[in-house]
Length: 124
Image 1 (cartoon, rainbow, N blue to C red):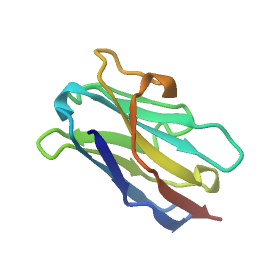
Image 2: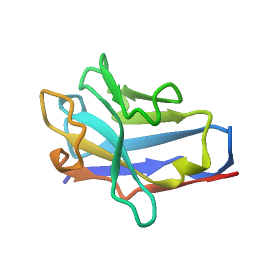
Image 3: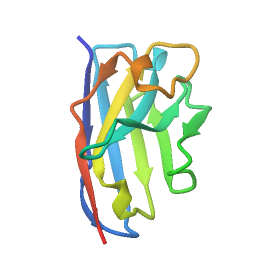
Image 4: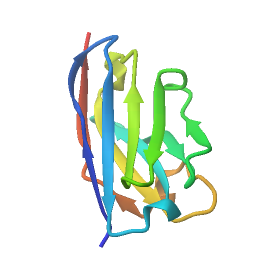
């Protein structure tokens, strides 16, 4: 079955950086669009970034545009989220997700497979 495993979360000061990784197995990775979402306590899960199967097109939520970069390595079955200039409001559990679609989804319900999440905490 499909498994998505996130790593790289942690505690960082405001202005710092983190790089999240999501390793995928049980699927033909290059056939899947990949997305990152996040969920803060008491809030709904929200879209952060997504990348097309070939990696040649990316999409970002306005709140992270210019600070976060999504990328993928199809040879390693891994998608990354480089997060720079982190803010306390970026604190959340970050999830990666996979969608076997030709277009790049930005809504959570469009993704079928999800990882377990990794905690990112940004201190002021």
